[in-house]
Image 1 (cartoon, rainbow, N blue to C red):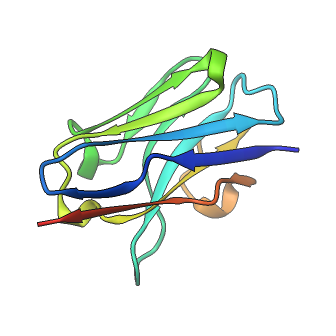
Image 2 (cartoon, helix red, strand yellow):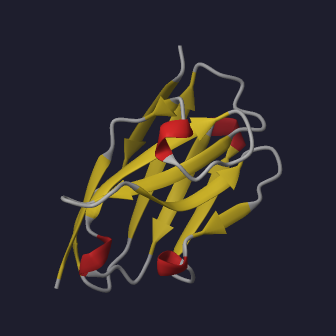
Image 3 (cartoon, rainbow, N blue to C red):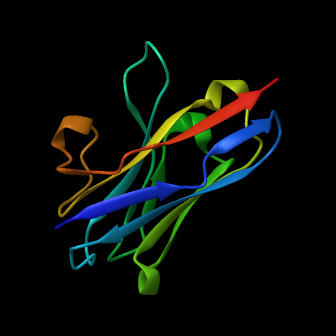
Length: 123
């Protein structure tokens, strides 16, 4: 049974940092696309950062480039999202999602999801 569990969310002031973790279990983990999505009230879920677990290749949406870093610990089957210089507009529920293929952009294409972790950034 594939399972993704996020952790690390919380409340910080603008300019602060958080590190999210997405722990995976129930699949081989190699050569998956793991993507961090975020969704704030009234907005569509959007991808923020992604990583190919086999190659380590990463990508970021423009809004988080230079502030967020996605990484992985293969031994722990965990993908991290280090978020620095947080701003109020980063406030959202953050989800990790996985698919055994190239990275699609649409949330509907991902079969595996975690339950989400809330990030709140105050000004």
